[in-house]
Each structure stands twice: as structure tokens, then as C-alpha cells.
Length: 258
Image 1: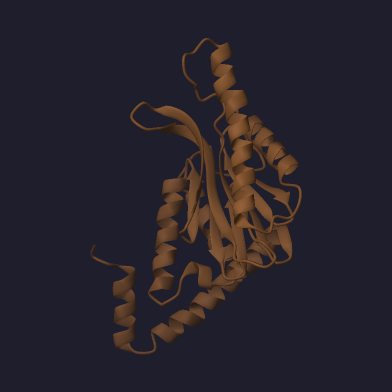
Image 2: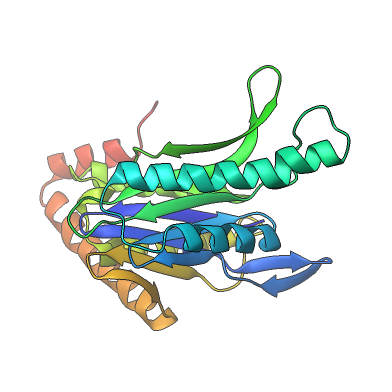
């Protein structure tokens, strides 16, 4: 499995993941963050061959810049519905099943940043729903500032919630922060999950989508952004610890009772 996260920033959106894969119980390095076009990227978990097929289909159908979010959603829906029809529904009929089974099941986070608009984030996958456990594809918008998927998603969500709480105590949201700052947070979160989830490991992969388009970051870039995050947080904490009353309020917000 894997851990994939996405964090919104004031000037873009970040995708991050680990790079550990498993083949016949042997740990391998695989790619989990992908460029679809200049302003759309995805982070995906699941079977690597299925992810590659999913990415190829998205690249084929979303080649051009998409200006409207509704257009992005419609094209993404068309792709997942077609893959579901071919690899789940039709394949289940060929195998003699009365209903569709989950033969094709990659899960992804799709991030987009139009040139003249705010970034948006969608969760896309294939699963079961309802009391009859009907197999169905789905795509829905993430309205929070962050999301996580994969085997380490619960750990990642906890660390992200703690980060969100720190900045909320300073009257800020993660989406108020710079892309560089949130790259630092993303690298920290993935590295923390590596210590907790056996299925998460390898190098950290990070991509940024902003007005300049999609860009994957090298390790040195990640280190630089992590230092920017540390410096910014240090400055903010100095301001919030300027007097004892303010410091107490800050700490209470970070460590709520319920």
C-alpha cells in the first residue's frame, strides 16, 4: 500500500507520497505522484499496474488545459465510469458473476490549479456503497484544506490535524500559508508516517501545482521548503509567546480537552 496526501496553499496545491512498493514480498521503489497535464496532478494508491492504466487514461482525456471546474469533474467522471464498465462490470459478466465485482480499484487524489482560479481537490476511486454493497466508481470534492489516502492515511490524517490545530491557534488555516511552507509540512507528515506504517517507506515524492504549472520537487528542494516551514513557524511562535496570557491561550488551543 502507500500513503498519499494533498494540502492546499494560498498560491497552489501540494501532492506528496512515499515511494515504497511491494512485489512478491520484495520492497521496491515506485512512482505514486503523476502529472496529468500542466495544471492537473494525481497521487494514487493501489495496484501499480492499475494505477498506470488509470494515469494513461487520464492523460489521454485531459490533455488540454481545463478552465472550468465543472469541465474537470465531467471529464474525470467519464474516465472512471468507462474504466469501471470495462474492468469491473464487463469483466464480472465474463466471469459469470450476477453483479459487478471490484477487479479494478485504484484510489487517487486529483489536484488541479487553473491559471486564473483557486485550487481544488477531488478524491476519486472505486468501492462499494449502500446496504447491497453495490460496486460503483465515485468522485467527490474535498472541501477541507487537506486529505490523505492509503494504508497510512489514518496516521497522516492525525499528523495533519495536529498541524492544522497549531496554525488554527494562530488564527490561520493551512490554505493561508505559502506553497513552500506547506511543502515543508507535507514532507514532515510523510516522513512521520514512515515511522508508523510498515507499508509506507522509501523516498518522499512531492509535486506542486501553482500558476506556473505542475512541478516535481527534488530532495534538496524538499529540504529547503522544510527549513522555510521551520523558520516561519518559529517567527509565528515568537509572536504568540510574547506574553504569558497569549501563550496560555495558544497552548490550550493546541491541546483541547475535547
